[in-house]
Length: 262
Image 1 (cartoon, helix red, strand yellow):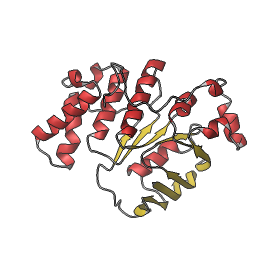
Image 2 (spheres, helix red, strand yellow; image 1 turned 90 degrees about the vertical axis):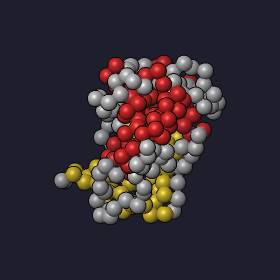
Image 3 (tube, helix red, strand yellow; image 1 turned 120 degrees about the horizontal axis):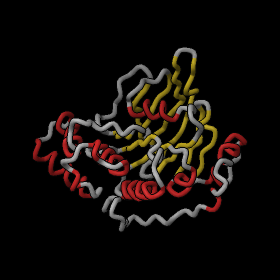
């Protein structure tokens, strides 16, 4: 379990995270919801070490791993982070993008990094794109390549910030199968989204942030079906068909040409 405890983050006079406390479960898909500006990305930046917190602490399985003003006790690579813009190095091929961090951080050989990268690309049905440059890939291929790059470091936790943004329904379905497979492989996921159907189908645990605080959380997506907070109730009214969305069984086999293979 990742415990985020009493985290405060302030930019000048603007307090973005206001003593936020949340427990994210391991081996599960933790879906974070909330309106734009509620603090989701800032929270992710703090967990991943991209930004310092002003107050608070993080605990992993009851062990203190990060506190305000102190260096992280997590090993480099323990947390993978897929940002909204994907951010692959455009001057490197897909294969080179995947190999870069393990070679620089873990100091493994080129041959070992290449062999592992090819095995990961094969799982994501991207091995034929290994020598392609990111700008030549489709949106769905770019996203899968970035996720593949993130898991090259064998993280304990993978964070995805708005992965459904600008994806069409077919690509969202492929993304869902990808994430289900990652959890089946033992990875812990924290995912933010504005796509309520996506949250309904995938969430093992749901969290609703508002003005830098956790308003409500639930198992699965129960807070979407039976919200107790009026702010959450108002938010979910934007999706009139939410109650009609079935939650699929957790079948991890995928016959799609685009998703990952077990």
